[in-house]
Image (cartoon, rainbow, N blue to C red; front, side, top):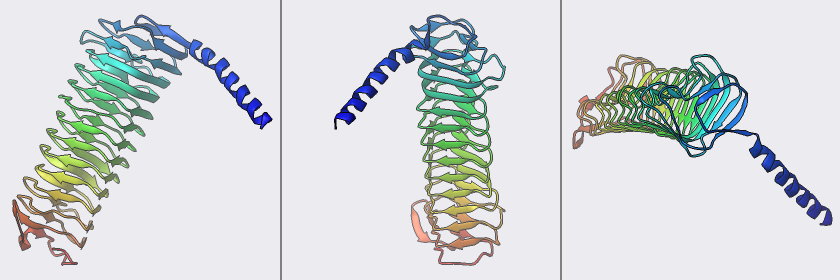
Length: 334
């Protein structure tokens, strides 16, 4: 017991000794300018600029905005790599306001953006290259895209609303988009390229699709409501599971043989689930009832098991024409 107490006291003393050194390592920033040395930086006050503010000229840079705001004049970027490839960069804990672009690190990679609010940009709120992680961040009210990232990137727990000139969240291949909100954007709420994961997001009132994905992507547990075109638009060979789509033009559209499992597509203005001319699709336990067009449309050979497609509008009586299987046969579908 005595040895345990000594060990605990030693640990506390070690941490106490370390903490001031860790803080001392953060170089204070009190004005816009070039960052020419690797290391950690921390804002000490609000900053304003008529062009680019913080220009990162080296690798391995971490910027803690420390709760402060960097404000611009509709030009330049709050934080930029000046279109030169940098790596291992981080930005956290503050507000970026009124630039052309909030974070312009599109040429760089291995980036972390955490707890940042990018507001009222002329163009995009946040641009990052490959291997970027954006978490707990808001990109809202911008004139371009909310968040735009390169391949093998992640957006989680973030909000991208009211971005008038593009998608709320736009991603490259092998993206991971989880637990976000993307509403009222100028095109799609969320768009990804191939081999991605899109899960547990909420999208509504976007001018085009709520969620639009490339090939071989998993789309699960999302809600897509009142989007201008499709709630979910899948390029093909995707897994679409456990999603809810309501009051879109079309609930779910698949353009290639994929798997649609346990989705709810109701109250859409045209079709509930439309697999178009794509063959070799698998549809299991989906409910596409009460849509104004066809409940489920799929081209055979395909596999349909235990799906429900009842009525149109508020008429939930079984209608044969509401399940267009085009020769697939009936495997306990209603």
